[in-house]
Image (spheres, rainbow, N blue to C red):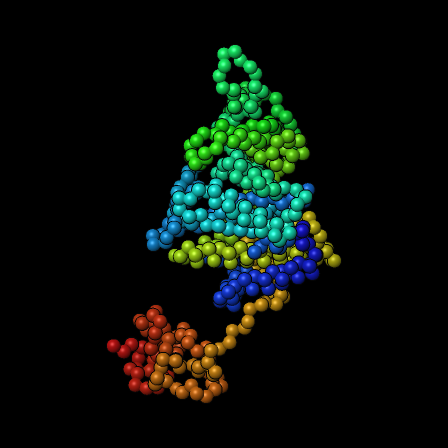
Amino acid sequence: MAVVTDRAEAFDVLAGFREQFYGCFERRADALLELTEALLCTEGPVKSLVGLPLPRAADGRLVLAVDVSPWLRPDGNCCPQRSFCHTYGRGKDEHRMIPGWPYSIIAALETGRTSWTALLDAVRLPPGADVTAITCAQIRQFVDRLTAAGQWQPGDRDILIVLDAGYEAPRIAWLLRDLPVEILGRMRSDRVLRRATPPRVYSPEGGRPAKHGGEFVFGDPATWETEQAVTHTDTRLYGQARAQAWDRLHPRLTRRAAWVGHHEPLPIIAGTVIRLTVEHLPSRGEPKPVWLWWSKVDATAADVDRCWQAFLRRFDIEHTFRMIKQTLGWTAPKLRDPAAADRWTWLVLAAHTQLRLARPLAQDLRRPWERPRATGAAHPGPGTTGVSEPAHDQRLASACAQTGQARSRTPARLPQPAHRYPLRRGTHAGNRTGPSTTGPPQEGHQTAPHGIKNKVGRGGCRRRAGRSWFAGRAVTRGCGRHTSGSRRPGPWPRR
């Protein structure tokens, strides 16, 4: 299913998602839904999703990006299950390890001139866990949910999963070899791979036949030999992009690290290596080559272009991380329980999904630097830039909420007072000497729900409550003249 662009259809999809999202809560459904809506309606930054329409590539396949984003908690000394998260410092090539909760997030990438992504799954990584094993388990469960939801069916193109250099792409491809997925990951520039196994030739000297071919050193062009495919693409910011591909290269595995418990013969995980170079960078820096490893072989020129372009789209998830942290306030709460952090993470993902579904409802909102739209063009068609991007405009949360959510019916119930008659001003449930609350409130008095402490305190007097040194606590006395009983006059509390 492609991305919804029609306004009426987008409204129906958004309303259906809100109904299903409300039905997922087993307890405190009204409060959790209103908390999610508060993320969307707040002015300024705030300190199963697979069944929805998902973006697809030009050939109809799903392109998923997997990355880890940390929830830093350096001051939470009592927070359990914290791990050291890798972060970048302010200096050049400065890396820091800060305690926090790392989350592995799966997002679907879009095409075209947009930086939106569809956040679909999030898993918190426990301390000391094997990131590759947990990522493979997460992808396996997610692909099963995609198949159950009808997003992928037998006969469709394989799902392309894009990874950064922090993952071991060949090992992930081996662990997920029974799934309809293709793994595309970046490799360091100092790697050494091996070529395909040479044919066995009889040697009178004997010896074991060779299992690996010659070396392919990324940093030594003399070992590259002739590439299988070469493409040239003209770009607007980087000049001409040149991609070279070498077929059937694999890493030489040893029984160390992740392969210690592998009792069978070590596999040969062959793939295609792609080297991407550009003429210049927008920052006028020195362009460095990007090395990619694709889990398929016999790559054509079209496959090479599709792979490196899909990898460049992976950086859109970085803009999404910045949006949910700075605008939606993902890491703003100072939570102590990891389970509470997991629930809050899913609420933020649900709020971001509502924004993504409400984009067609906000297409007539233009940026300050854009020209006014002509008459009759309030709802542009696909390919326009009428929708703000998360990487450029942080006001989208408020704009989409005011445009789409204000018109959609909320499934939450209206709050009802717990008391038959709301308390009158100047009274409190624990105030035995206060006015009677058996009758309806008098005209002209302010009311408050039962059990909720008024901001002015138990006395309820706004005239002198602010002068009390005890006003900062939960209980505050009144001035004495506007309350009944034997209270001590003045702002000072009784001792």
